[in-house]
Amino acid sequence: MTLSTLLGRRVIRHGIAWLLVVANISLIIWRDPAHAEEGLRSSAVLLMVAALTIYTHFWLLTHLMERRRYALYALATVATLLAGGALLNLFDEVVQIKVIDPHGQTSSTAYLYGHAVGNILLAVSLSTVARYVRRGIVSHFQMQQLRALQLETELSLLKAQVNQHFLFNTLNNLYGLSLAAPDQMPEALLQLAGLMRYQLDSSRQSTVTVGTEAEYLANYIGLEKLRLRDNTTVEFTADLPHPDQPLAPLLLLPLVENCFKHAIGPGGENTIRIHLTQTDTGLTLHTGNSIPPHFRPAPSGLGLPTLRARLAQFYPGTRHRLAIEASETFYTANLQLVL
Image (cartoon, rainbow, N blue to C red; front, side, top):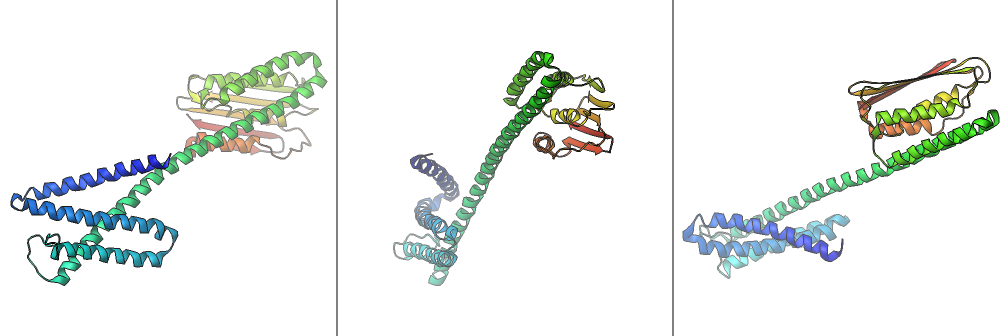
């Protein structure tokens, strides 16, 4: 926004405010037609002096108080109020425009001057309150805009982390598959291409549907099963009566990834259970996997921390519940979402 545009908006805003003040004073004056002409003159002088002191005080606020020069600001403000009162008193006594006491009910100079300073103080106080109320409202909306922009940026970063984390894990799986069953690599690469296409498409959207996310999970599980040995049993069920309900994309994948990351051992029976169920208002993902003997988990990566961050963004507070339990032989995770 250019300086001329900013000044133009300020002039229009202040002009509207002064028009409202003038209109209100005019209504009061025309209730007493016998003194209308005198009232118009005195009101015009009062508004002129009030405007001069108000804008002088605005300058003091900007250049002294807001720069923490409090003592100088206090002295300058008192001087401005006294000068404004003196100017009103000058019009009242010298120019004979009865601004302070239009009906001439008192002749005390001290009273008139004190009354004039009081009028100026009231005008300055009201204008200062209006200035900072407006600033507070504007600051509130600006903070909301900044917060929305920050959330959007954080979500973009989280989605990028999800994509990178998924690709890293999948390439590791394909490496293992190339050693164990190289003849299955072409099919695995095709499946990976489909999954990556979905990743790219969903990362541009704020929501997908429960049905498409479940299909994505099924394809991912199919890709993982290509590298598994016969000693691993995988159970996957999806009970989705409302597949068109919206869902944040790629939110369920980290828990499913962990099953295949931690459950696969060279000997013994390995078990992976993944159950996705839906109600009218919620979605539950329950995962469980056996832990091979002598298993030593790798240091925690981005999976669960990123998941928790995304849950806080998309389903804050009581809209989500993530419970994880681990024993020496079995690991379970239960994610509940309020859609």
